[in-house]
Image 1 (cartoon, chains in turn blue, yellow):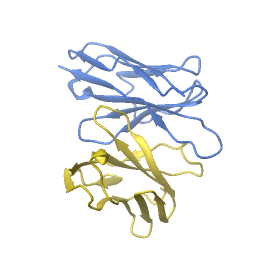
Image 2: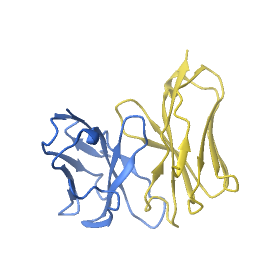
Image 3: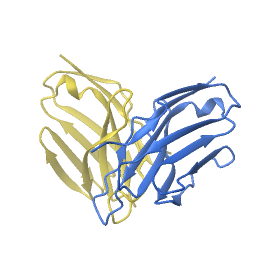
Length: 115
Length: 114
């Protein structure tokens, strides 16, 4: 079974530029998560989708971050404009969203450096 | 105060030693307690999870949860160099494992010295 795919793996941009990340979850997984992991910290949830609907985006900085999952499968996360403090690894995870035992499977992440 | 506190280390132990990793938390609503392992430049992978208080053993790994003290532990017996990684504790509330937001600790970087 293929895992969660993310691209690009690395991205370097200058502040005030825009950037987009892509995630393809494990086939059949209805729930998709985007996490931000700053160096030396644990992942922090940015947004959770159930199919193509948003379940939780309370920690998403909506003035600069946006995310979509239009067809309920893959997803994109965008930052516009980027700030220095956005430098982090952006992790995508997915889970089955069955009645129980919904392990979240993580992708390898996209490492963003904002200069 | 953070909801989940974890000593970031780094922690270095000789091969074969017993490793103890710990987290404390403040949110009484947490019901599921997880340990993730994260190798360098990889995403976290679930090692073990426990529901409510108690112990759970899986091979060389033992997870303990003490809800009265809001304290969880992961023990690694007969540690191997391949165990060298960052270990993240994570917690969630709710009645269904995995459907709720995970709150992570900062992670402890562990190195097993051959």
